[in-house]
Image (cartoon, rainbow, N blue to C red; front, side, top):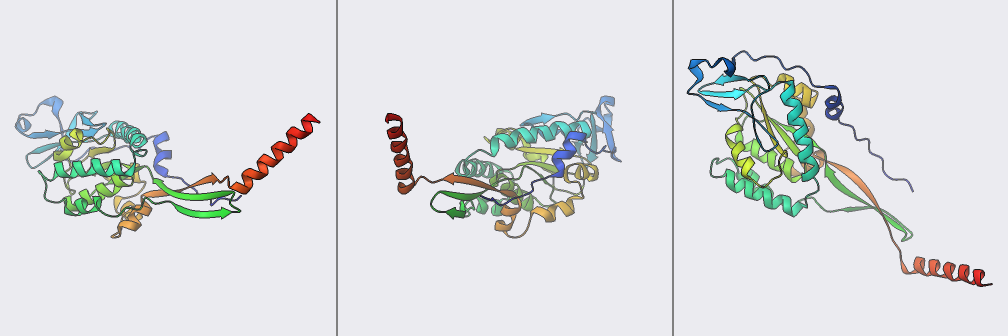
Length: 277
């Protein structure tokens, strides 16, 4: 029996073994250990992973308007990615209906703070692609079934909240965990992290890293600029995006039909008869 063969290799996991790209300091970097007086009244957002807030390893932040956002370093990136891997192991085995229920609850909570969830809300009620397909059957002895499984840790970075929440829902429905990147030009996710932490979605499934310039973060996590990575996974079609965010998996089911069982029983009786003789 020859099964379809798929080469599954993602550079992100190989790079994780050997370390990430060094992340350069940002231009507007602020170190809170020095306690500069001009930032004492500013709102501060740390990094978010493993279901809770974490101060950046180097204690550095960057200023945007009246807000200080954490500057992630290579050490932060390693801990965040480890969180995403652990979240993936839990989330990928949840039944689809359980995922949809928890994602729906998260969307309802987010709707109190954002009006950009219309498309994400529709997606939860969309007919989903969770059906198995029969690839092969022979002589009623076995069947080869193909299903779709999560691809792994997906990276997300968006300029608009509407697209961010839509693609976040697509990633979660597909069973993947996610690391959201935010910089000076992207929409800010930090204000919603408390809602993520209070949701019943397992810790580590949704993670957020920030840096004034995410170029090094993108190279470490995507092995390319995010614009190229985005084209690999996301399209205007939910069906195509679902295929891109998942991988095929083949399962072999042996079938014991009546004739086959009779043949086995006949052989057993003959073997017993020979032993008696």
